[in-house]
Length: 298
Ligand code: OGA
Ligand code: MN
Image 1: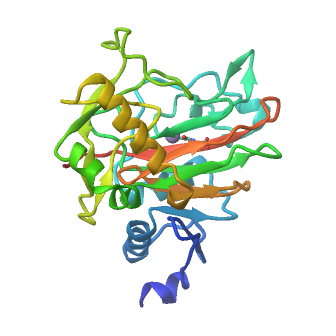
Image 2 (image 1 turned 90 degrees about the vertical axis):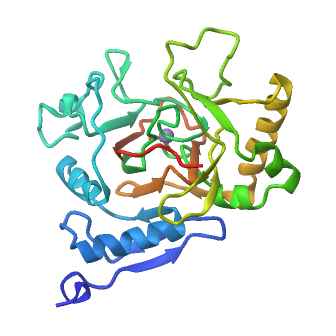
Image 3 (image 1 turned 60 degrees about the vertical axis):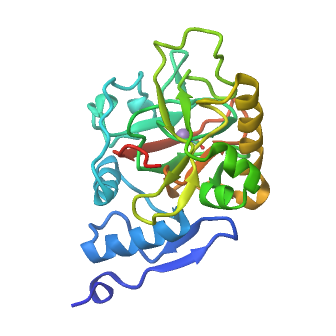
């Protein structure tokens, strides 16, 4: 039997000229055949961000689904104090708080402390773990509870950003590396005048080649890319500012308006993402897992 006999037909609908596609006809709670997982990967390579609507994944479902695409990242630190009883989010699993494969993205507070990461407000464009030697290949985010407005996630097509750069700017960054630093902020430039040696940091090629598509993308982001190696400080500043502005132009962007039950997943090697502001007093809860990555290739 073919996949279609057993799994039904999967539909791929583009979400606009920049990037992104909605996939329908799949219940992500079911285990996928290898053929179906490959079909999804194929769509992922073409559209960079995939959206599945109306899913209801348990923690185990999310883990199983994501594991079709590589090795799940394990966090070293446990989570912060999760509100498992208050929200019933974890199917009564008291160990979820320490679950190393899953992370909450949430502003919900218990005893004054957020139960998840990147809690409040807007967030500049970034690459998940772009400051590490092996940035995550993929991020898989599942929406559980959302504010009445805002909190959209914006995705930028970094292939397109590279391809549409002025030649003179391409020449300035050709063959160079840039320093990425994680300072645990959401909307502030890295401060290079301070000692960052204890903050996670790494140099990556400014222009990356995707290991599967072999396409070139711009591998920098406004939140964490601090310095282009080999350029004078001021020139590095100027070039980075131009790269960020270019990569965040509307024609590079798909803006995702979340609905509860959405699963949105992106390829961190060719996509950056940011978030719009939302009311601080309204609760927002998403559950995230990530797939281990590899060194970024020039
Ligand atoms: C993330 C992230 C954006 C959002 O989970 O890595 O950046 O919209 N989330 O919460
Ligand atoms: Mn992120």
